[in-house]
Length: 350
Image (cartoon, rainbow, N blue to C red):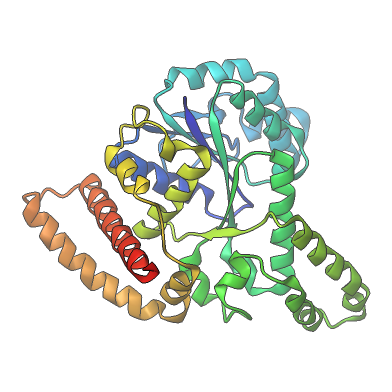
């Protein structure tokens, strides 16, 4: 049974960077992976796509032939792909059922909030027994503003209802969050989507005009709507940080059921054994401390530790250290940390 990540998110949320990093990670741990570019406007991917929509449809051709702008052109391109899906699916099948797929989707929010084509394409994939999970990346910058935070909550909720698939919302670029300014609350308030009524006075303060006063009731109603559904929460991600990528993949694999299946598809026995030990046991408080409260100190300490590890690994592998060697080391290290946490938790529970 093949598995696939469907990577969505607004422009600038880091989708292509994520796809490139995840491809490197999965390849390093032995999981045969292919990235498929579904964005007809993305002609400079920072990964080598196994399949590229631009070989079938380009945004330039659509705009020229039909007199559309960029947004309309991308939506029209998705409609064209939907109409000619059988041909595209034949190319996907050529990758083989053993490949773990990552779909790099366009960033136009209309495609995953109300336009039908992307949802239709995902449903067609499901008919071929693909186990799908949506990975919705949203720049963590937006949590620094109460009004923008409410907006991304609505966006995430609408995407979940529209696509109707296992769905993981991710605050990306968490390593840059400390550069954006001080948060009004701790990170867990935003990642766990706690009582949004605490945001209402801050929204009024952020929009003190008469127009802002007129929308006060609307903001309160939106906050109540989001909390009533109780569906939205966020993982966090620093794509350049290996531990962060490892933690997110453990969540993704549980959502698709990959963790609980055999390793025959991916061949990544090291990773499978690590995640079957219990998965990520870190807390959002650990992330708050790492990326916000004491980021500088952690960066300096991890740089020193990395230099020491590189020396150790260079000696172990005879100076021929590869990305695969480094990732394997990090996974083993992560597994050891999780086992230690399980042991401490068991001991404390006695």
